Amino acid sequence: MSGHSKWATIKHKKGALDAKRGKIFTQLIKEITMAAKAGGDPEKNPRLRTAVAAAKAENMPSDNIKRAIQRGTGELPGVTYEEITFEGYGPGGAAILIETSTDNRNRTVSDIRHIFGKNGGNMGNAGSVAHLFHKKGDIVIPKSQAKEDDLMNLVLENGADDLQDDGDNWEILTDPAVYEAVLEAIKAAGYKPELSEVSMIPENYVKLEGQQARTMFRLMEAMEDYDDVQNVYTNADIDQKDLEEVAG
Image (cartoon, rainbow, N blue to C red; front, side, top):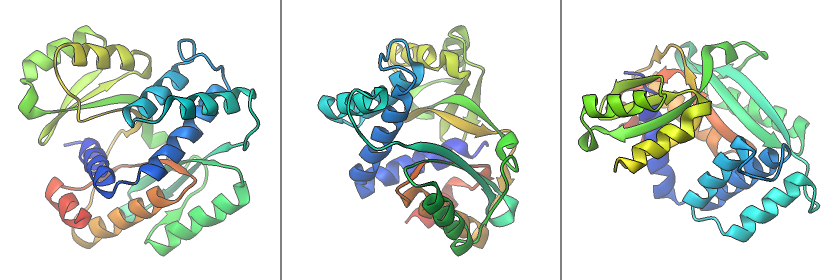
């Protein structure tokens, strides 16, 4: 089992349970602003289109979305954000990739290093773990919704790379260029994804159990709770039962 969708879906459920809407909105506004630097028309800017769709899925008001786009294109004044990716290691040598958006590079570098050290991890050099991940469209469908053959035929016909068995879910991986087309085909067929995003997917996984799993979960949570962090990815593979236990 890949481990990725299990972590992502339990994180999604926990986020909804904790109602961290303020944090979610902040992340989305930053992403829209950064994406809009390449052009403010979502139809011509795939990254912006994906960010706007994610914001709408969280019921962000249209005016907020519009202002974030205008700040990105320079039509409105606003904070200038810089994107920085951090790399490092957690318990058991599991790799961690952290995407941030910040208006103060020195503060963010210092804080990320501190979070690693305080939670059983180590910050690595640029390039130390990035090669272990590849950008992919990632769509998760509960097995209760779909038979493998039916779903396999549908997604492959629409350009997906693979369908994987991940415990209680089917995980569909796509090239980012066809992610939207595959997602629309899935929805049109009546399936309701539990999770859908363009993500950094590990090539291989490191199995963690017991104390290592608990420490890794705390490290991931601490990173995700930090305001400048947009996304956190890991190649740690933690069983669903262990994830649910440490998530409380």
